[in-house]
Image 1 (cartoon, rainbow, N blue to C red):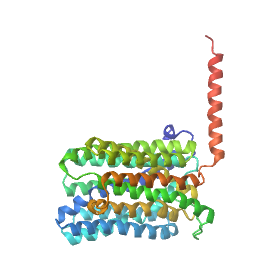
Image 2: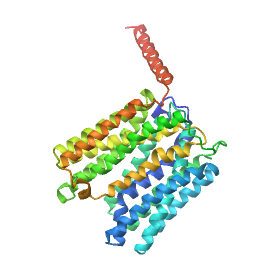
Image 3: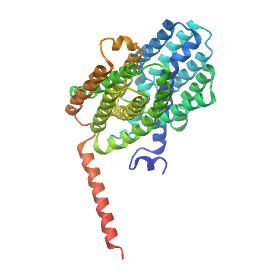
Length: 409
């Protein structure tokens, strides 16, 4: 049975399923952990906020740069060897950060960490797309997001419960990144020789832009919304509780959305995620309090889970062998890392011309407007597959009714 009980009638083997999940989950969990703790790491080396912010900017900036480079060169190398070097680079860079002895060294290692994130992530996601059929891709993606945030949650819980210091925490993150090595132990990760010419068929490009637009706006709005939450002791416990619930919801709703998207299509979970985040923005701006902060963080976690699962599948749906790395670099990694940097904008700079209520309403309107391009986009899950699945379910229910009616009473 393997992992089949999780996702039903998938055609991907259990080995390939586990390989794709572990390959991406270890690296994504490592990224989200660094995103959460990177400021604390740099602050332990220097109290100068200039160097702290510079370290974060360099991390995100070189992650974006390396994602673009990785999408161009990843398909030209042996997939297994390239991914092995990429994972090892990430583990070694993380360990070197733990051994950093000063400001200059920590900034230098932030560059290495950024490079070690982007160079192989498009190729690892392309492997998921190459290993799955369109009718099962979202379920595998959803399981990958589930695994990512279960690992991230356990790592954060370990840090908090054991009260780990900075050096020990960084070494724990290196262990998390090492999870991706398990994928190489399970499978050869060899992809058949592919075309390397970059072609962007106009119809696919158009559909790609329709899906990319709401993803960009969603990431911008979610990043800026953190500035609505006051940074003081009154809200500290609410943020801690809400962040925990947020990670849990990302894991659960990522998996659930992946399953749903393989049944009814990709567009509905995207629209529901936009509406959910828009409503939570409005609630946060209408009556901000510790309770509404917890509700917002929980709801945003559900929305993030939905988006991460679906946008891990969509570039694979729209691309073809030989172009998947570039689609993933542009459609997921590139905008995600760039727009994450918006969280570094000071709240006073963002809210200087707006009240919290007006700002949250503006974000809600932006999200609701971003539904329009989703409605115009073509569904990437073929209609024939949706109809066939509904027909099979109907026949199965009908057979069950006939069987129950024929049983002696």
